[in-house]
Image (cartoon, rainbow, N blue to C red):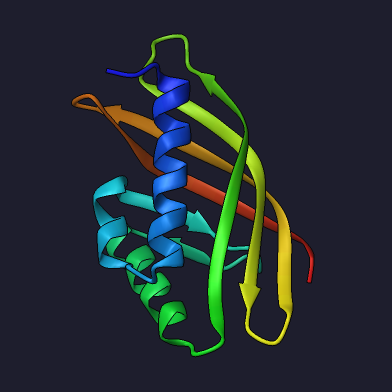
Length: 126
């Protein structure tokens, strides 16, 4: 099994690719059931299925291109069961519309897999 830092960074790259492919359904296995996401506009999305539905809604918008999250740091909890990831995010839409900011994610290790448990996005531009 890869080191937690490497595993989380790899999962982030994978979820970026799934978002770029507009494949909401394949995001679900990477989320805990009780996933909570606070979007850049402050909207609260509770539950993995609701998060997947929110992505599917965005993917249905003809102008939506992608979100890219770039990991800057990963810090592991003392017991090794959780980790905090911090980084920068950017969203793009056709017509040159862009938004960006910072994010913080909480990951939980379950049966050898790192799953997203919480995400907070703060929009700083756009």
